[in-house]
Image 1 (tube, helix red, strand yellow):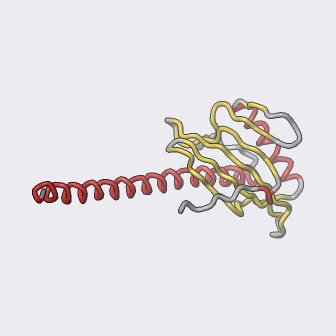
Image 2 (tube, helix red, strand yellow):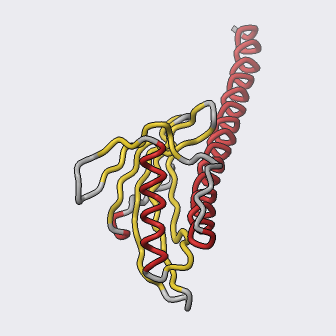
Image 3 (cartoon, one colour):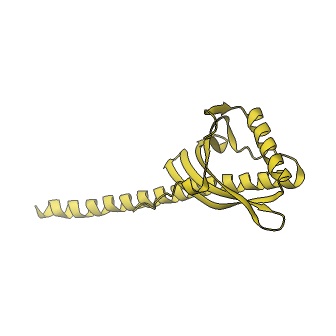
Length: 171
């Protein structure tokens, strides 16, 4: 029995160590994925502000998947191609600029990883006039997937800013 204990105790300690290492690696991987998704939204806002200031929609980085689902409260869900999506973004930003919007910024970006290649983000954007006053705020919730090209928005829903999803920390 003593020999068995001498074998079991080091073995159980070693297994516990492997579990801790695996947990740390998972946390590190999740943080890396979350940072990559945050970068998508940083690029998103940079691209939108570039258009507002220069009337040019940069094609890189690509933010959207080849087919994007758009859901709004004013129309039925629609699947958009890149060309239709780009035209919609251009028209939308041109209309904002015509209303005096000079800058757009994220007030909130909240991300929840659902898997190593799927994320959900719920954000609030604030649109500012030239004098710094808030023109309006808008909410949107996004599904993102990680493709071989990186993280891409595959679906999004536009909604009121007070309806964004607040993800609770795990614990």
